[in-house]
Length: 134
Image (cartoon, rainbow, N blue to C red):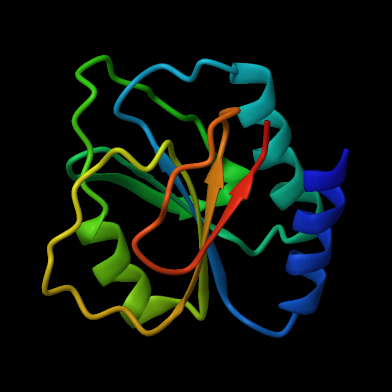
């Protein structure tokens, strides 16, 4: 339950900031119940959260209260488009992913990013802060 309280605290600290939750949809989640619980937490605490569904492209951008996530099985993901969108539209982005996707090397990202890793292994992230949510 440690990650839940950590995430809840991060959300409450940003109550006056715009936030987005991005979900890597490049493959079916290994822990679908965990994914649903993370999304429900955002729905309850921050119903104004923008939900971004993306793999190698942005598939959907909508309010988190109106979500119907579609996962794919190709395993290809790129974070560049989502991060470019976030740079222009929100103060903080939370990204549920295993961090195995591509990021354009010259990408300039100045906003706050939290990588929510739904796995027992916590990989190194290119910037921002990684949080293990498993």
